[in-house]
Length: 602
Image 1 (cartoon, rainbow, N blue to C red):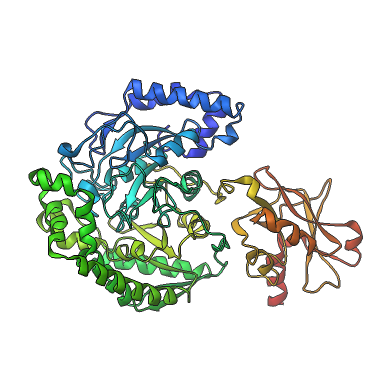
Image 2 (image 1 turned 45 degrees about the vertical axis):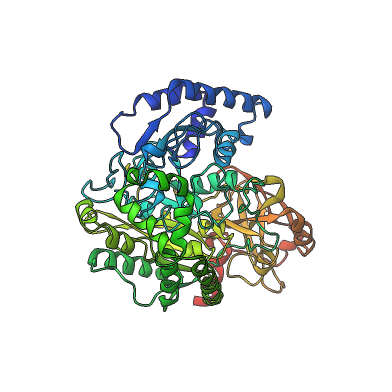
């Protein structure tokens, strides 16, 4: 079980294993002195969840496909309510026992997930380092002298060590990304309001995002698809707008990167980021240096402006009566709120609006930004000696994202020469999580890294799960002029189709270059023998746009059913036999792009 992905948990259950057996076995392995946990689920709590799981299975007539997280264990950061378990926010005097689950916990439970405990954090989610908790300091999973990152320190540690396949964190200024970068795992920071915050202890309520840690991009997206939904009980919750861009990043994306990246003297981090940029460029991306000072101006509003008052407002009643119960460093940050007035808050709002207008214009020039997830990696002793300044340094490339209402996806990049993990983060506009994830998944596999600190290899495939509402999307395999970078790809992107992955067919097809077609097109034909695996791309096409897409497919081509390398059946381009008159058999090239490249070389 150690290091299993969501897919591997699902495979275990499909092979006949039971959640009760596997989860009790998992809980029996958890040591009581692991400071990544604040509370571990007891037998009564597990039994109640197993009963709910059994009920859900009956409700879906035993169809596990309708329970994408069936029996999958996870950890919830201890500022997220789980019914019957104390919520502490890493402050014992603040603790309370909620009677109901946070909305996101309920959604995960309805999809089959089982929470097995509450994880440690920087108190009141104030910090990016993971050292501000009376419950202990979760150390880095690669070197215990170094910080794990915060505030979601325990959540990241548990995933990196393979104890759970995913965990929930929260992210206000980078707490769902920095720990991912420092522990060789994935961190998905969704658009503000994509996940409900009902039942979550706020840090800055207007900025807070529940986040997802996982060892693979596919697992993070699986959780995202379950969790993302409008919650009418949360006034800041949002549904994805109809006008949201759902197209994938191009095959050769244009990225904006810091013109003068700051690493605070960390030569290892500087070298690792330069290597990551070279690798992105080698894979076809264009990385263009830009001035990041605009984002520094945004960051100043977070801790040097009135947004600090929002942290105080979140715990005002408690802070007014039990000031001494708050961690000294956290207290020093939150109580800065008393320096600011209501007028300062409005001035900050106006300033942010102006900066966002400029920032959006800059972002619009690129497919995404690429930054170091964390600019450096500090030892625990260093953080304890200089807690505020060094913590501030850690948020150099994360603090501005939530203020600007952007999405972000942190993904491993390499292991530094000193053995510590280094990660990069892709940043894009709101509601671009899946586009970032699709690109990040291919990048992650290309790094050759293992899952977290487990030493287990990543799966070679980069397929993301289908959209949470499968009826709304139709998966289509394209083989020729609709591939990314090809002349007809716009027929997909203008319909808000989402790129899923590159893969191949099963080895029972032949590919032909058709005669007299404009633009040039291939024809894919299934054969009884003598076939080969042909390179294809999978795209999710919105159901309402599928009809118009098919209507534009000219004879002798049509849309039929193809079999992909993993045995799945999807809709895809096929060719009538009559269309092969005068066609050239190009099967030996393995795909349309390779054939065109050979012609260009010739």
